[in-house]
Image (tube, rainbow, N blue to C red; front, side):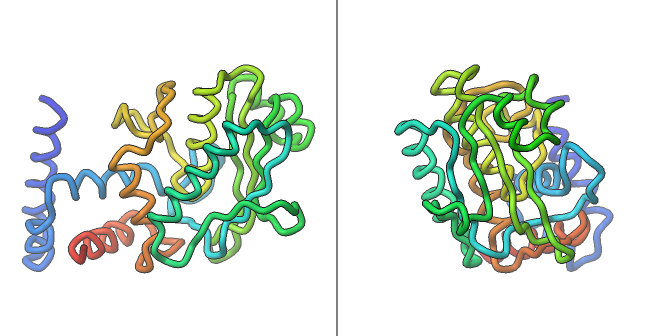
Length: 234
């Protein structure tokens, strides 16, 4: 059976097990809406590494980025492009900003080698050999991110790969932290790609996470209901 048939079968099973109000809501959602909901729950609940609970987490304050290491003009231009795209998708007041003073920042992008990154952040020592890009984020008791850092290896990766890694790691730092094999064109694709654009479904995930009705700390069942309500109101 192909993936589309399996999705239709899943929708039928879900609809048949719901209450009348829930069935009416689901029947008003498109097939694509259902795909977005399922992909959001796959990508946005928890992290690939560690034992953090499988709930939503997001930035409540603006993301203030300071760039260090050895940035080049092309990567800085790409960062501006990514920043603009994210800011256009967020509607809950969240914004990405780039600052020139590290003391004003809450997020650090290091452009350099993995060895240099591990010297700055020793906890990454065991990861940099096999990862040309990494990110870490930290949150408070309300599941709101408070700070973070990432790196792009500009020694081992060529410029196209660097741009891809910059987009992937920064986007995952928003709270969309899990890779998937589901969509080849997605920035969250777990297999190695060099895509430097958001797929349509990627943009929808960012838009939904940074929607005024989406909160941090929601589990799978809670986020499922919120997503349906947001999508029905679009």
